Length: 270
Image (tube, rainbow, N blue to C red; front, top):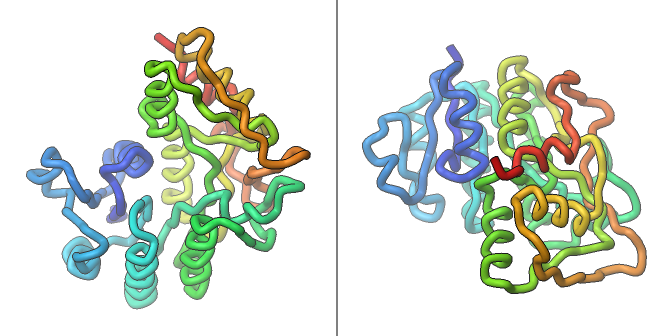
């Protein structure tokens, strides 16, 4: 049985992946805060800025490390160098959750797996730096998963949206931003497939269709059961700008594909 270590398993995305995989593999996770994990022998407390990841991987000896970490950028870069060193020495694999922001300097078209990465944002540049480090490994030892915005009924983005609506404060939307989206439950299934089939290389795991940011948020608000929210239109360009990651070469089976309507349906008030 494969032994899997999920870094950031107490977070929204990492937690969803843990729940998906734990029934099928010998799965472990890390957490930063939260007493609910302290007595769970499959969870290890890990503070990137002060703890040594080598201590954890020495105990677990994972075949696959899934990185869903958040936090200090420099600490993440150092941690992923440790991950690369471990994977190289043990012939293990890392699955790194990256971002569509690695392409945010290109705004005229959607981006595909083997397009050149170039970012103007600090966040995008940081993700590119980690991608570049991991791509020094043999290809069989890494999978880079680039994600658009990830939603879900309990996601940080939806919680923030609800907070603004409940406070009757204006929520910012971007009418000129064309994007695709993802949701945690389907993403977890896609990661499961990648683990099970030992897929390697670069994958883009977003919805197959594109939508403007303001239109998606309006549909999400309706699905959540709210009426007449305050929205503030923020224009950053005179033309549509794209921040979307679509697959061209590394495609998943049809049953793992989805549209933005599936994301909206997951949000609907029951």
